[in-house]
Image (cartoon, rainbow, N blue to C red):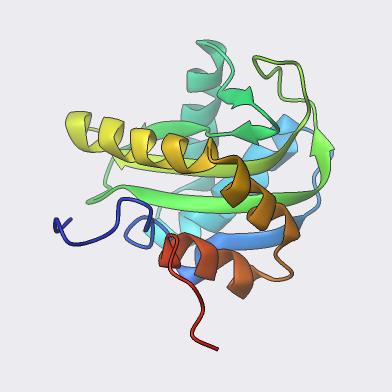
Length: 161
């Protein structure tokens, strides 16, 4: 990542295909299965392995950090970079979050097995972004996958239109 790139810009982690505006899932297990299915296509991996890593991490403690936001994450064999997926859920689900509130915004992070510092930096960037109440409100109000992606890619840049 170059220094002139905004810390708010997460387009190096997310691709337009990795954003979903109205994912319908009944629970955390189904959420992980859905996201793993999308992630597996993006990284040419196995959905089953991705689900296993997410569940293993979740056993250490919920990645729901409050305010309706969760950042599930895991390390996956064969990845060459940190990859993110974002989903806004059509209906909030129980996530055993730290504040016991249901989760409706999920930013999944997958990292190479040997990406220690890189993984932590990506987690910190996503966490900082997802703690920004104004940004989170914009995510909840965005009407489409493209609008969501634009929010992540633009950082705080304003639309020219």
